[in-house]
Length: 112
View 1: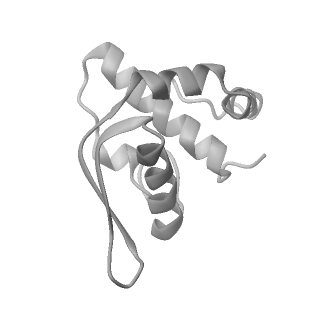
View 2: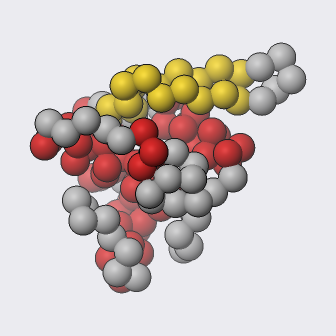
View 3: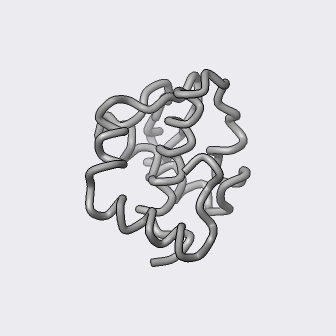
């Protein structure tokens, strides 16, 4: 597993949004963006990750639009994790593996 694996990126996003929700702190859009505080990945990859999270119902407050040319545009309105997203993060085997990877590489987020 690597820092830029989809499962790791998903886990980081979900964990950050859940931390903000629990603490009542506003979400910093820069932190969850493709070149923000948590990771540096290409926009196209980030947009697909966000689309997957929205389509699965794991996050809300994110508008994903597909253009005529097939590009994906992501607009963060008021991103938040859903109950399904929390359950996915806590119960899915791939998400547990991502958390173990982050802990083992000492790159776990402070709120994880």
